[in-house]
Length: 297
Image (cartoon, rainbow, N blue to C red; front, side, top):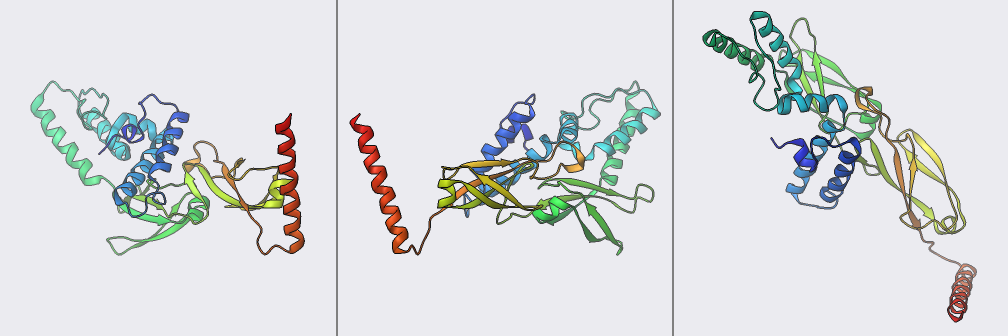
């Protein structure tokens, strides 16, 4: 499996801002809408999202830095290490580089070899199964539930918390009976209006030409409802406005809520009346005359 830092092209000591900037750049480059029909680019986009969903979350990143590709099974690894430490004298080191038990040492190699083998089998046996779950962006925003059919025939309703992203993993376990032990692996479907980058959302808002020129108020859809946005005079096409706190909530309540960035798309008028066309001609003639006077100075 490729290293998440290598996927985003950042060093391991990168700050949150550098990781976010690298993700946005790569996401724009490999987004399926920009590369229609390119399956390799779509796969790359999914891996970029998965890497960012881990490295942008402080808790997940800490576990990834410690356990590498085994970060999702860190609870089982630590539980097995705790059992091993109770059985003899062992040393635990960084797990990410050489596997979950590469750092154990023992004075009796034959005893350790047997224990090592048993622990590996135990982790393999108790490792949670993965169950794919697909949700809409609205469900990822609000949180939702899913009804799962277990191998035992039992049906189980599970909660998916707000803030999940593609690649998010949710551990479901009954802890005591060990009848239920699985990871929900989330995929968030694309949205026709909003593009998601981490916790931030991006959308376009249509602004009538007269409001772009003179200023005015426009309605901006958000996942919470409609908001009114004041457009200043002489707003340019493509100008972007930030609506703080209108993005996605943080997963597992770690971090802050994202923002919504609304990009202006100026809507040109159609079906003009003769009077309106005359007004535009007078506007054009006036600006041409003014530019000519400015050039004579």
